[in-house]
Image (cartoon, rainbow, N blue to C red):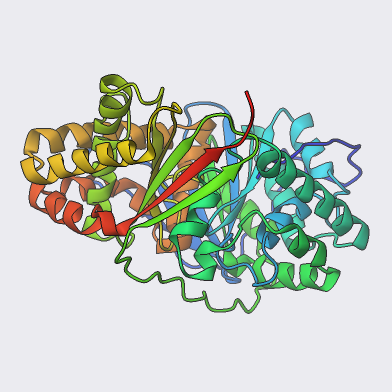
Length: 468
């Protein structure tokens, strides 16, 4: 998911942000929150939908004279076509190969020459593109994003080139480095049973080679349409002006017929799974564990978010104390919900709570799993009292605020886009704290019994093969 930036001379006619704008056409009424009764920190949210189905979220913030534009398409790893593994990621690269008015890689040059930064990534349930620019260049970026949504330059040369780029990325990031793909790429393939959740998201090299020009055109026409996307604008701008620009540049793009989301359900796991993977480049063993998560937005889902804080997040967490401080098995243990590919909010399907560590050779894998069991059992037997729950809430609030403030507004845009795509409710960003506050000690205990049972666990052991 790393995008290599390149530059070339722009040749398109680009709108000047000081010029006049067209009058916006009719759209659905905007929903603006928070209400006057809201208390605490609130993210401004203006939400509406264009006639072509494009969801739009505006969140003004005058803290700094910058604007962040994020365009999220409701297509990710999970629902890419079978026999075309890695196709969603391949297409992320194709989106930088030129459009109607911007030549190959000129989108990147346009943003960078205007003092901005940009990137794109592919995740479980979306592919996203974002730009962070000086506020007075907001119109320029909206025009550019609409230009490639309207018509991507799909050619055999561009496809062949990006197939090579992605295959090289797989080799560099996974195949030719120690612990490549561990555990973020490996674990879902071992823990899950449904192909959509369990295939090689990065892409098998054979499947990447097999992608045809017709495949690419069909994929673009189907999934890169306004009715399968959300545009989020965060930063220093006038909402009425931004709304006019969004209508002007995106309003005329036709919608598409989007197929139904495939069945993503996973069966209840009834027996622990253990796997070993030989790694010819690793010189120390590693271990990852994963538990299937409760359904997103359920009470148990929020309870698992707090259990993650208690067990795994921070130096005060139970597993850090037990594995690092007390026993010295490892220098660190990391993980979480949707670990390495996002956060506990920006996905929409089955998910794993996962942890991993690289450890000393004289430490047996069973010793690590035994510590994990002991810490979970201790929580279950002693219970989660209100004091422990309150501390977890403080840590969760801090984590949430870190996410909202991340990277000049991008963290906020990420949550707004995810809640618009998956819940049709970007204002949910302002409801998260209250949802976590509803969690009781009794709910925590029920969640531990059901979701942190050993029979809901998958363990992956890396067997090092490199000679020191």
